[in-house]
Length: 135
Image 1 (cartoon, rainbow, N blue to C red):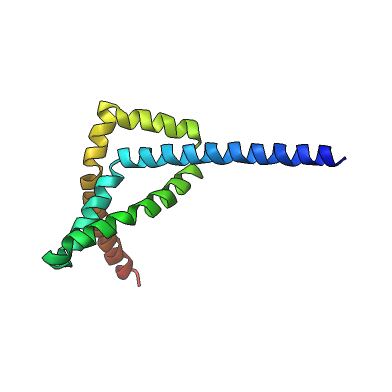
Image 2 (cartoon, rainbow, N blue to C red; image 1 turned 60 degrees about the vertical axis):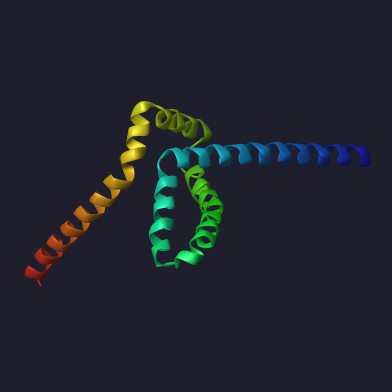
């Protein structure tokens, strides 16, 4: 009886180990996908912009520490994407972002998003003006 229980426990431990390894690989693949989308460039840009308020003598230390926070951010974002996309879908998205068109989209994404935010803010003020007419 003890041998059967031991074999069952070892089997469960082995299965959990395999699942953890697959999940880790999936997370790494998802992080690489996120970097391909231009997210990395956006984060680097944000670090640089925020760093303009840092004194020149502290800029290098600031940049190193700020970039160190990216590991945790990428992991959280990967978990978010892993909840919405399967491993196979992430592989397909990665293949797209490795294509010429995907690379073009990634290189333009930040600028497009910034412009879209401006359009959205302007539109929001327009709609707010309409709402005020009907108060």
